[in-house]
Amino acid sequence: MSAPRRPLTAHPATALAGRVQVPGDKSISHRALMFAALAIGQTRIEGLLEGEDVLRTAAAMRALGARIESAGGAWRVQGVGIGGLAEPEDVLDMGNSGTAARLLTGILATHPIFSVMTGDASLRRRPMRRVTEPLSACGAIFHTRAGGRLPMSIEGARDPLPIDHRLQVASAQVKSALLLAGLNARGTTRIEEPAATRDHTENMLAHFGADITVEAAGAGRMITLAGQPELRAADIVVPGDPSSAAFLQVAAILIPDSRVTVQGIGLNPLRTGLMLTLREMGAALSVTNERIEGGEPVGDSVAGFSTLSCVDVPAERAPSMIDEYPILAVACAHACGTSRLRGLAELRVKESDRLEATAALLAANGVSVTIEGDDLLVHGTGEAPEGGGMVSTHMDHRLAMSALVLGSSARRPVQVDDTAFIDTSFPGFVALMNSLGCKLA
Ligand code: S3P
Figure 1 (cartoon, rainbow, N blue to C red):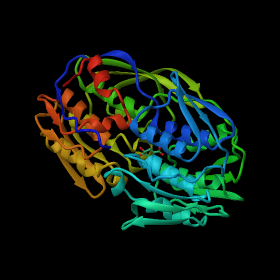
Figure 2: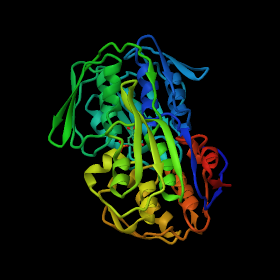
Figure 3: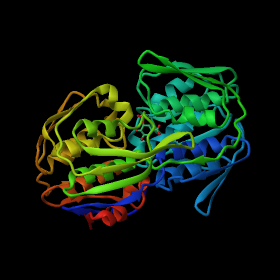
Figure 4: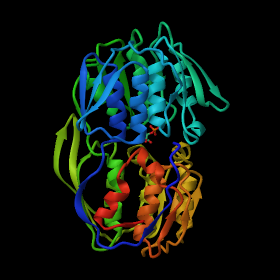
């Protein structure tokens, strides 16, 4: 992203209050645009996240021939059908978005076209081999920079073979890339995941009429997809992003006298690990008005100031809260005792090395932290952290928002070097937090 840096200071706040909504779910928004572009007919998408990451997906799908327009609050996508994408005239720039890059690589792998993909400095550091290696089995040819990094060229397979693969990492992005490739392969694609990860791709493929089955397989799942279905346009309502709501929930829990309701957030059980963990810590966090909207469970969360105890989070829970560890670590900094967050190797390959950067964020603000192998240990005192530090966000939106919540709940202000990347997932975050009573300036 070429936007100028946006430094910001979070001053200690008291008594957050309000009933608010957060922008649409990022994972579901990317998928809605991509799948609608591969369907026959016109799909209407309500509640799409209009953040930088998703706008990159919209631009890429347009460059590949889909008609996508924003029409008075909702979005309309005219799909081209499976196998119908056209060769893009220029490089596809996926900005800061790993999800956009990985999922689109899957789609392009089984279209007989040539494309080149790049991203910003953060995305160009992230591993692509986790998708290019298994995708090569369908006949696609990839050339990447050293270490399997972007930019890369993609020569899609002319006569794509279906893939039968067991995932090496618990990654919804890799699973989705392989399933998307399978859409245009003749025959049956089979993907086994050793641990269940977010299943928005599976849910949405079924919503568009694909022949997909999901079965339990040990601790994970076996997913089977029949190739070359006709996807039919189907309207989508995108729920509020639970990963965005997390910052508001934790702020309300940490700041004395607060009570904040977030309406209409997604409650897919493969996304709610943070809410479970916060409750284990003793947080007053409840859900009301539970309902099903657009095939996904949705509800309103109510969070209030709470005294927290420390927690031991098992590695198996990581896939259901993979993006929430930085803000959970901020909550642990307020808790009494040592919290151990286990099995965080995947955090090292997010928008930044989130394991190191989360530890640095806390350490700069007077919190004692240790990294032991892939575990993060946060030694809380049961009191608000000292604060007063300067945080480097390394082009990572979730670190920036976590640092602002820390500053709002610490004893002294916290400075953040750059908050511009918050726009990738949560446009309007600063104004929304200030409307609740934060002092972000
Ligand atoms: C996502 C999956 C997760 C998550 C990312 C969004 C998705 O990545 O961190 O923000 O939409 O599939 P991995 O599946 O690689 O862990």
